[in-house]
Amino acid sequence: MPEAASATCATIGDSEFDRDTAVTRRAPGVYDIDLSAGWTIISAVNGGYLLAILGRALADALPHADPFTISAHYLTASQPGPAVIRTDVVRTGRTLSTGQASLFQYDEEGKEVERIRVLASYGDLGSLPDDVRTSAKPPAIPPMDQCFGPEDGPAPVEGSSAITDRLMLKLDPSTLGWALGAPSGKGEMRSWFGLADGRDADPFSLLLAVDALPPTAFEIGLKGWVPTVELTVHIRCRPAPGPLRVSITTRNLAGGFLEEDAEVWDSADRLVAQSRQLARVRLS
Image (cartoon, rainbow, N blue to C red):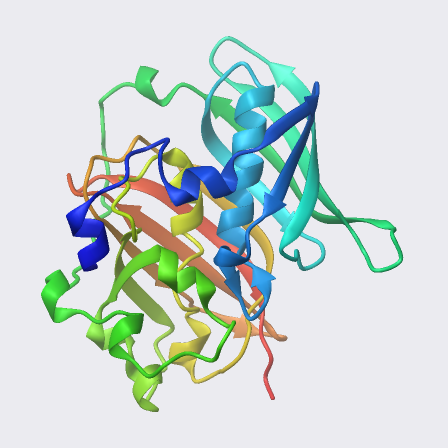
């Protein structure tokens, strides 16, 4: 991990991530937040960071605290600055509650614009049974000291990768061909993942983790921004302390769109989150 993270580790609830995703309740179901510029890529706010913000608003609005599944549609690119979130309780039950939420900002003409809309089901992860029957296996990633982070590459374009200063990323060298001008063509990305201040993962930071790695499009030989159109995340259990391992794959690019399937594994070798997103790519 970065030296700053290893020297003094932040805790859940007392981290830059917690401060930057905290929402303020203005009225029942209505929340205010100032989107931080620290979680941007090429001036646009990262989709996983936005999902964590909406996830927190819904955790306050619903009687259950833990996201089980969230599906988000990204309608327009969010910008750093003030935003308002409006939530609606769709259904409440004994074990699951369902709600929806939208995040709005104002454009240059003062018109309200919806940026992202989500539908989610929440429950209590601590009440789930321990029984696990799976054929899934953790990704094979070299030890962290044999992997590479943004600090090992050339200096980024100013303002294009502020989010990387807030993350601990150590990427599998076998998925870094794009950084050397020789992409593998396999559409794979694997990395150790954490927050730079050492804060351990929780269900809300898992919503960030599935969308925080470089896009698999880079290893297919494409360049530039890969904006998310739709992202669905399943949270399977609370992660154990320690760094996460994230594996993302793309099998099909067609019509200018690709899918990314992500798995997130914790230090106890448990599959703690899964996601699939549809993203748009520039082919020229």
